[in-house]
Image (cartoon, rainbow, N blue to C red; front, side):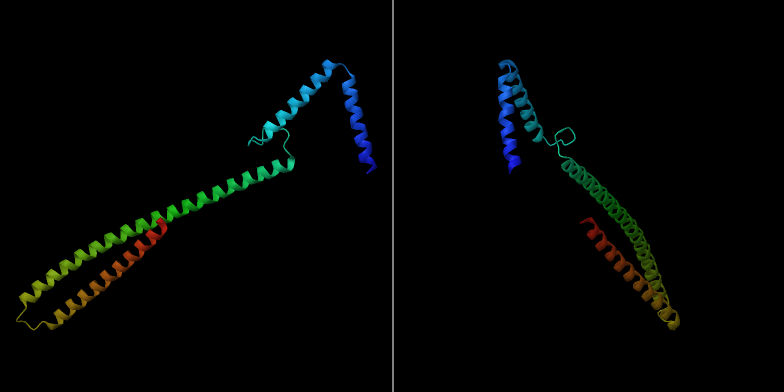
Amino acid sequence: MSSLLSHNKDRPHIRKSLSDSSPTSSAATTRSLRHERLSRLSSSGSSDVSNDSTTNPAESYFQRRENRLSARKKAVEETENNDYKKMYEKALSTNQRLKSKLETSKEELVLIQDQLQKVQKGRAGDCGSTVLEAEKKVKTELKMENQRLKDENGALIRVITKLSK
């Protein structure tokens, strides 16, 4: 407490000595002090920390840290977006490949069905039950493969819609 009192006692003495000096230098000193205060106030309101010479070192450290963290977060988000993009493109290419397989399987099925109908008409009187059974077996296998490809195509479409959201 005594140090506070001695500090307060010193302060008026300093002011008094400033006022005791010439009035011109006192006014100039007062103006320069005001100018310094105004410049500090205006610079503390600015958002640019690197240009502020009166910034607290801890504040500038935290500002730089925040900048680094936000830059790192942006980089991670960009890589994640690129990963999703690659996955999406891969799913699209797989989907196109499966669609083309499905189309060729459908065409083969139609051809085999036509052949089966021709054979059935031509052999209506024949007793070719073994041939008919074999053709029926091929027909059911093709239908099962066709259904499997349709299911895969549907699954890929669901994956693509989830990725695109």
